[in-house]
Image 1: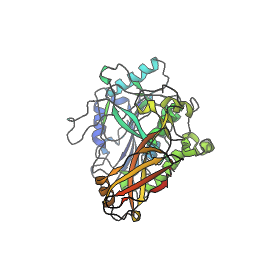
Image 2: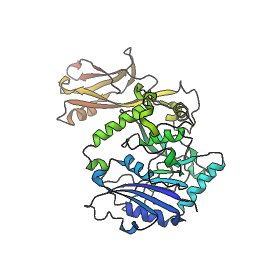
Image 3: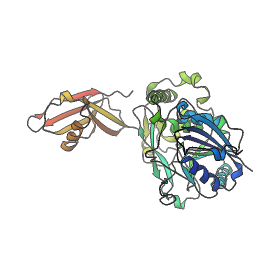
Image 4: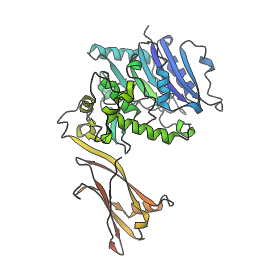
Length: 418
């Protein structure tokens, strides 16, 4: 008789109705579901109707004209306000498919972990793909996990899915560093203990939620088997940022909030604790304990080499000595300084404060031609480079070479990480 509070933030999504049908029809106990939908919809979308469910007592529908939406985190916060003490919490997107008896299996897995001594287990991952146009054919039959790729220039963490090695032989979930916002299964009281921050927009949502959950005493796990599939590409389907012209401002404000929460680039994290209120970290574990567990250091945007090799947490080895800088930066070169037509090489290096090379990746003739020809109305050439180093580069250097004139004047500039 355990109740599951199901959170679905739906934005003008033609997959919402098929998702609801699959969710209910594959549940062992469909009457024990409490399904709350932040229904962000447009009258123009004739297919987007919940008429079938409006009188269904299992549903709590928040009717939101799409023009009033403030993004997915805002919508998920609205959903959590409808929580009424249900035993378990399942957070989804609005485009999924499910295995048979998914509800019983997820409850059993959480209870199994509780029996092993984890008081507040949380299951999450980037789940494998399905493709609506040919479903059920084409579903990916592989368990995925989350890994960090790098810190974004704006300060948030960039995560990516990866296959979970050896999952077919596993008997239980594996410890995780991160969570996926499109699949979270845990105890219902999560809604009250780790409430969604409505002031975040998109990037940073998952990292913020994972760290706050961990500091509130939740133990993160990746499932070792498939329970759910997710649609990732969503080509041609309307997203919030397609409709909301103010989304760049929302996104910029969200990044700033993320940096303030984690003290990225020496933002004074403790100073803003009162401003965050209930969206702050928990007091069961500290941010420092999470960083050592996960192999990260938010303040300096560093990642432990153990974490970069995708080894399971907690971090093994010396924490401070193992931290690396792994970033992707954009080198902007003014086109007015590139006056020759026969460049065959750009010697591109990242330098430390003393001017020593710590990373080098040159551009050949083909890359140079592409760089100069793309975005013809732009006054700058934009050269992207991704590096990994124990030292954070202080500046970049581009040294062009011309076939007719040889090495030209070096171009150098200090790197701005803010």
